Structures are given as structure tokens and as C-alpha cells.
Length: 114
Image (cartoon, rainbow, N blue to C red; front, side, top):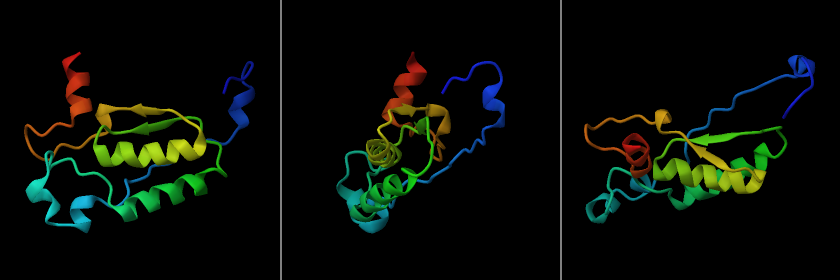
């Protein structure tokens, strides 16, 4: 949104911080044993439903930007919310937490390599 002069100063602003939906590895502990990327699980079916519900809920808000960390579950969550809000996702590697040395989501690794 652009405003002439300082017309936007009086508008309320909010930052929404949302955690990803339920993870597949939490819903199915055996998933990890056969996974290609065991440290980057996708959403569980309940996580998909949660993300779709969040998108519907956030339609009431004036959201201009949608950021996501590069983990698969967060991008999937953001994708479902973005579809409901008709927004593009901005993937930001800096929003990631890396708990295991050497485990870097593919999108983050590509961004760091640039």
C-alpha cells in the first residue's frame, strides 16, 4: 500500500506470526524411517486442514505480505494461506531455526550459495 505524504501514519499496523500446521512426522512417527528428507517433514492431513482454516480466518484482515521460512511444512502452510488471501509467498531463509549442524532446507541452501 502506498500513501501520499504521511497519510499512512494513522493506520493501525499488525504483524501476525503463525507457526506451521501439524507435521507429518508427529502424526506418523514411522514416516521418518522411509523419508527422503527426514529433517524436513511436510504437513499432516490435520496440518493441511489447519492451514486452510487459517487462510479463511485471515481473509478478514488486511494482510499485504506473507513470509515463510524455507522448510517444507512452513511453505506448505504459507501456500494454503496465500491461496485464500490471493498473495504471493516471500521465502526468507533467515526465518529458519537450524537445530542440527548441516541440516539446511534446500531453499535456504540455494539462497546462501548465491
